[in-house]
Length: 267
Ligand SMILES: C[S@@+](CC[C@H](N)C(=O)[O-])C[C@H]1O[C@@H](n2cnc3c(N)ncnc32)[C@H](O)[C@@H]1O
Image 1 (spheres, rainbow, N blue to C red):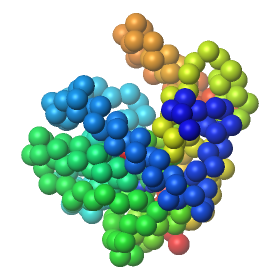
Image 2 (image 1 turned 90 degrees about the vertical axis):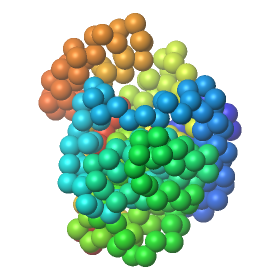
Image 3 (image 1 turned 60 degrees about the vertical axis):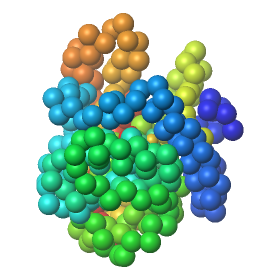
């Protein structure tokens, strides 16, 4: 499968279904091993330095707001990738375990811990079978990683390793309305996705919510998508304000492209 996916595969990725976990993980591991190598060669170690003063878009701020209680907690970062979330959480004083199916990405997270002077327990594991004892973690986090996982099996495994009453917080690309997504897919933009990816549908979020017991979705990113055109980046504050107004209008969440999703283990 190419990195430029066809619309059907992006909308309903067969590799995320139960029974295809090994195939999915092998494809994602190969893709992200290559990405880790590219990152090191082209951007270098210094790109891993976490700048706490960095100005973040509203969806990132909302994600981090959910994690203000992180200090002192046992946290699992799923699909840790470049290690940004793990590193920032460790800097906040959390006890962080980071997992990724790509060994190359695990190496980047280890390097990130090193260059930022923090401790992170990094393991090359798949979220579908972690081997951690039941209820090992107070909080689970994932930054643009849940949509990469084989959802049903990973949902069950993550709910198992989370403590009762614990929360799992994700910042993810979403596709709330099929017709909006199809319209977008017919516009002249190329859909860049890794093989195992594909933005989350509402019914997928709902199914994972049932595994954990409860969930909440906070929607973001309607006009903010225009930031892809770097020439208008200076315009970002206007886009953020426009989105916050639009998202208060009933029905407009159907146009959101990102969400902060909070699952709570009530079962
Ligand atoms: C889009 S990247 C996000 C990385 C990182 N969280 C970030 O914010 O940049 C998705 C990550 O999920 C990882 N991944 C994919 N499938 C996985 C699985 N089954 N278990 C653990 N990690 C997985 C990939 O290797 C990749 O590093």
